Length: 85
Image (cartoon, rainbow, N blue to C red; front, side, top):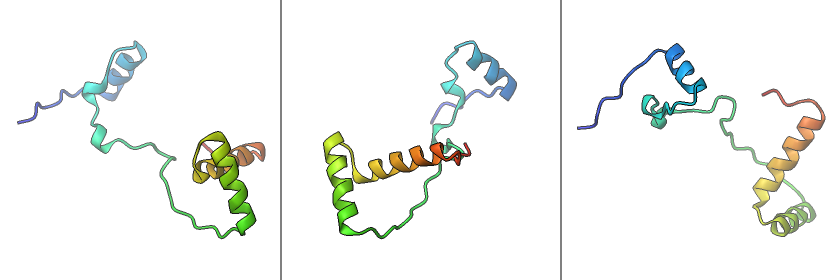
């Protein structure tokens, strides 16, 4: 049988965290979420020359095509002041 986790108030958890204490014993990592960072799938049709260019750049820096697209989109949104996190 699994050991029951201790419970504390949110205020107490914040205090302990702020003081640098390890509060992981009070967290349920199975249900943890990162608000605002949920993922959604989006399909985009691109011409072959764009895909080839993305693949070349991804290979050059050692990441996936998807990573290049995400980084470039995030950079552009930030430049345009459209990031709302």
